[in-house]
Image 1 (spheres, rainbow, N blue to C red):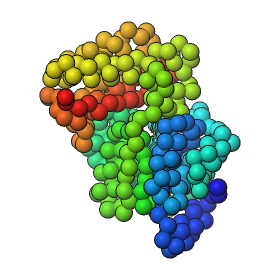
Image 2 (cartoon, rainbow, N blue to C red):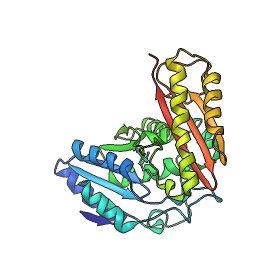
Image 3 (cartoon, rainbow, N blue to C red):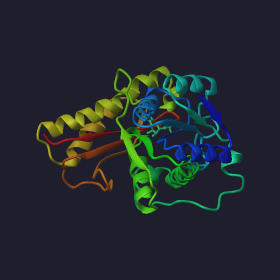
Image 4 (cartoon, helix red, strand yellow):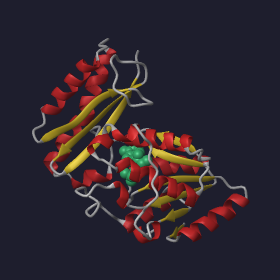
Length: 282
Ligand code: AMP
């Protein structure tokens, strides 16, 4: 497994791999890797000749009062996990390598970037779209793998790829969960024991919403009321939003429909957690 920190070295290596006719699979991450990340890497391993993982905590997607400084890091552990997943190349640039000057070029996906996560975290998706566009120009993947856990991020990236004609296939993989249903996240490491217990309510709430749909309920408001009630059983858990949305545009729905997505964001102490569930009509 190769570890590369320089953009030009990454570009020339991938260029020669492409000339040899190898397909490049790419998994962008911010590190502190867990099974969710590894599931993307394993899928990339199955589908592509060369697997590149980037580890870069991207400053431009964090707001001024967010957790950029304390975001968890574990270089040694990440390296071992990548190795075990069969990764060929880790691309691990410094912030100075990625942003040698104050950035003046940004990718903005209008509309979808301003709702839900984007409304709570202004500028977040501009930072995400910009860094992913840069990483695509550096790694030149044939396929890039993302997690459904960050549903809105996937929607933003798909729109960026379409809008800017990036020649890359976006593959979205299911959310990997802990035993009690909590979506795996690097940020779960922030949680105290009490908060960790309470965090399981997020998935319970999503499932409770799904059960109502299965029982024939069709009004989004009834789902969100039920979900809010489940979440409110946990003291110290604050709800940022619960939304029943169209799976493509993420616009709020007046009536439930096939393939809708339910998105939740909560705060537990200083930690913000998000999750979602795609719900089928039976
Ligand atoms: P991050 O390091 O949090 O930026 O995540 C890197 C990639 O891993 C993103 O595409 C995430 O959606 C994906 N990911 C994070 N958590 C999970 C999870 N629990 N299951 C599946 N994919 C995940």
